[in-house]
Image 1 (tube, rainbow, N blue to C red):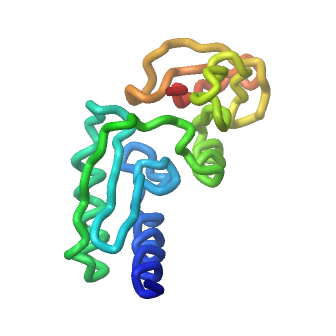
Image 2: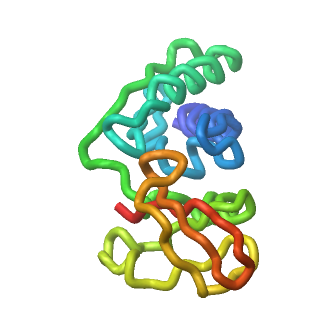
Image 3: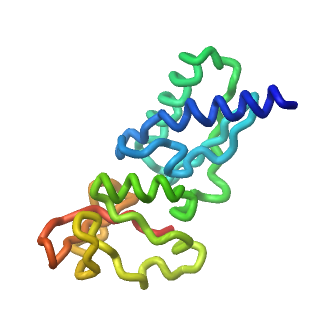
Length: 159
């Protein structure tokens, strides 16, 4: 079994280098899109069932696995349970912030308190922020603005 565990660790490392096509600063591992890693199968869940990047994500994972000589590993999509922002890793939240996107607070989707907590500006960390539009650059984000520094930014919607 140690070899299976080593293979799963290797696959996780490979996938930690596969960027999300819409937010290249984070990997598919960081976003929690990769649900399960096995020696024979990788299970992925898109951030939205109609996410236009789903095919690109699966193709990028396939290319990365094939390049590593792991063409026998199957990729399977699973929609149930649906992806939640709670699956974004702590490292992923930090990478989003560094990229200029406000991540949802940890555990916000599970508690239902995500929209009640103050949104911090990813540039200056001020809580003096306001939502401009529920629709941001992608369906999973909303457009916000910091009234302290004046900068607009995307915020991941809690779900």
